[in-house]
Length: 443
Image (cartoon, rainbow, N blue to C red):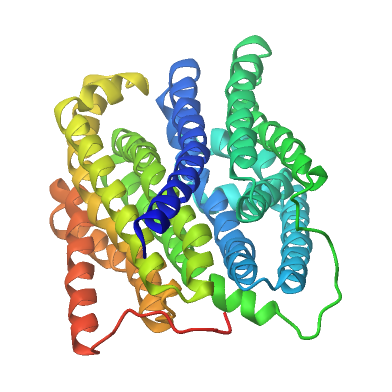
């Protein structure tokens, strides 16, 4: 690559990255501030109830990664190869399938909300709030599914700034309506969940502007020479499997922590999961850039350009995570107070957990980014292995720590992630994997 080409690609990288960071920042701030508002207006049990309901949102994310994000990666590669017909068809499939999935969950919410809440929460004092938060989340499932799908698609099609603006406004509306619904109208935790759904609907409305732009390449069509559903599933499978495992981990961790450490423990864990949202700012921003700009370079078969994108991504995530981790290690009590800890025992447990989790999330972020890199290099088996290992390794470690060393349960995550890192390194070396793009891949 010439210096001019590197400069142009660096500018393009920055545009994609900061757009992705803004999208994720808005989402992270929305989730974190949402938890802060609930903690201060409803109480720490409200924060816990939201976290207990999160496996449902994670399930939405799993299906979207499989059939939405996977499709967006194919669309990016298709644009890189100038195959616009394939890109349009993949986009159409993604929209239709994600909408149908959303409607299925809406019907499920009407018929089985109480049963789902009981599966997520076995604590009588938290169950009622869990039910109240869960119902609008299930009824508004189409909004969740379409928000994520459209943001990924229009970003790949050249409107990352519009996607950023839509998600920023989405979360601003969410936070404003939190105050209105909870404080002014007195709807409690139901109002918090409903505010999220309304915010997503507003964001979707803003993103639809993309289809009026002259540079829009996306439209709806079901005409294509060959079926593509399995290709979409194959492309999104590693991400989706990682999300499935994360759903199982979250459900297991909620149950284990609640039964081992009680209400103060589940509150501390809920605050730590909100801290994960801040780390997610970096990992999701980096992964979005790799999935869009990286997919375009992969589609063109340009090894040097793709390596440049990976190097820039890793430099960014290293700096950002290091600064965040240092701040949490120094001032965990600030986070604890923000989320409305109601007693000294909860505050002490939360401060201890936050410091440990701040370190735990660092290897998690690197491993997740590595999974995306393997996938884009068409090392599908390694990507799939990481998808399984990323969360499933934590579950047995968490169970063993809860059974034999409950006082050290918060170390479960960092122990599991370090084990995964060692195994991944051994497999990479043992299989003599060479990370090099292959021209004109089918994916």
